[in-house]
Length: 132
Image 1 (tube, helix red, strand yellow):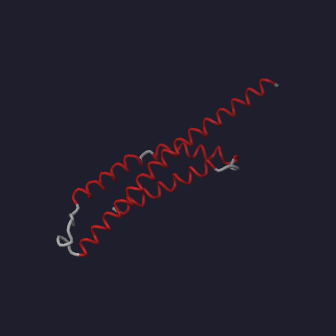
Image 2: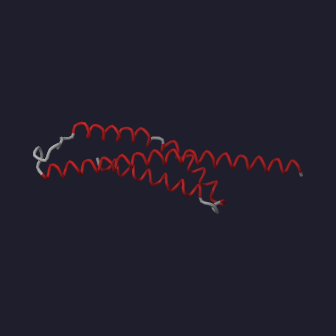
Image 3: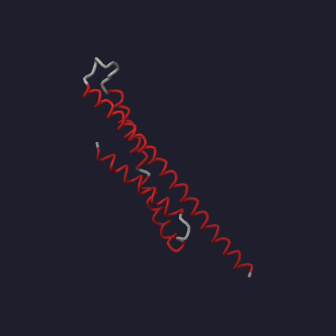
């Protein structure tokens, strides 16, 4: 199951990098290319959403079927440690899922805003040309 988390981590990282590149000032010469690349990658990155839901269900299933160590006498120290590690990994993975979904939403929103700003700038240029 570790490969799924690595893939999700790389997807979240790529989304974060694209959001940063789209929002950095001073990249106007590269902006049109970045917008085109980002708009083309939004549809493939949409697969992150059902993938995150699948992984969230996996976390829930592991939570429901885990052995319980409610009292110190019911588990050995190694079982108790394994139980604690499992809980920590589940919390980390839930944060990764949340980050991937938030970064996708941010990437989608920022891309739409940047495209809208570009369209408005083009409209302003046309109105200026018409006024001259």
